[in-house]
Length: 261
Image 1 (spheres, rainbow, N blue to C red):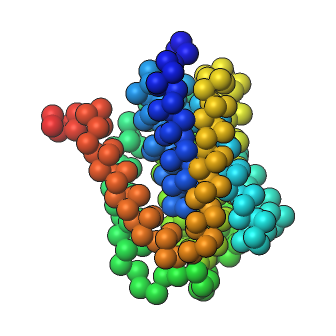
Image 2: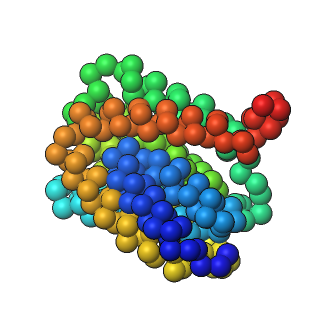
């Protein structure tokens, strides 16, 4: 599309800041940034590609902030990060040729299920619990699947990573958030590489939104590290419910079309 107007650009920057802030704590930033890009007139594939570019800044910013405070060991996560990037790259390839209606239809229900899990599960805090999968199996079986989803559709991937780290890897909420941002960065990078190769990224607006994402992620990650589960858990639940409601209210949602609502 042509360059957006000044007002649209400012709105996109505001959306990117909020996306970075929310995503650094609870995930779901793509469900703020992608609709904003679509409303600005970008095509669906261009919106996904540009979102991957600007998302790199937010997830990268948050990853560095968490790593500096010792909440994630970057060296030990190289393998899972590579698998996340590979899964996302494959998903992005498919995203250029298939519609995302299936994901768009079922995502609201998955988000509600995640919200309920975090809302009703007792004793959920920042203390690690017994893991249900070894790190090797977790990285091999879970990470590339979520990475694939992140590449082919994207929004909500952070919430899925969070759920997996808490339910299967036994991580506390703050540790899960920190590791989620690293894998988010890796899967963003994999999808970005494919979208850049096929030429569907708006570089100018993507880089400007990236700067806003960076600032938002810095603010959000600092708030999360200061308050831990006290802020992460409620914001995660609220974000999942709000994003599910937003998706279901979208007139273009396949479920509304199928049911003639």
